[in-house]
Image 1 (cartoon, one colour):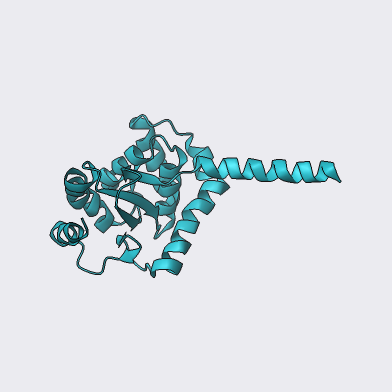
Image 2: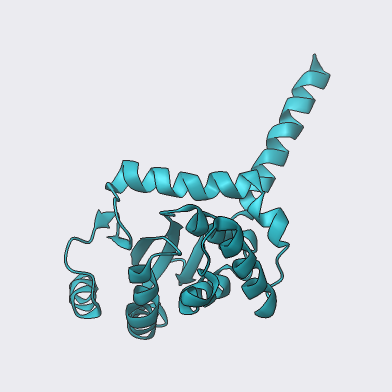
Length: 191
């Protein structure tokens, strides 16, 4: 009987350790007063625009000053975004760099008429950028897959997310038009 209990304990310890390796992609001070959650899809042009136009200003004015942290959560709208999300989540040490690179070069890797072509472009892009990723292993990793899908499920369940990007600030959905001016004004009132 005690052997069974030990085996069960070891199994759950292993599962817990594997899940602990998959970490949220976060920018900013872990103890910041304000937490922004951004639900995004890597094939969404509006999400790429958020990373190109809003995030750098947000980083400069709030994140780098320790006032705000932002968590990037997965909300893939299609299989290409789903696969790209798995790649971004695969290497916790490079997750933010991979995410930023995928958004800044979205038009390069997203090309293709089939998911096989897009995956091939994504794989080539990741290799050319020098990221330390085992592409095939990451794409087929069931734990990462569950992590990505659970982000999407939680977004719908907890915040009624139905489009990307959707921004949540301290657990409340940001309902205004998502531009830097509106976001800045909202954040300044919270500081």
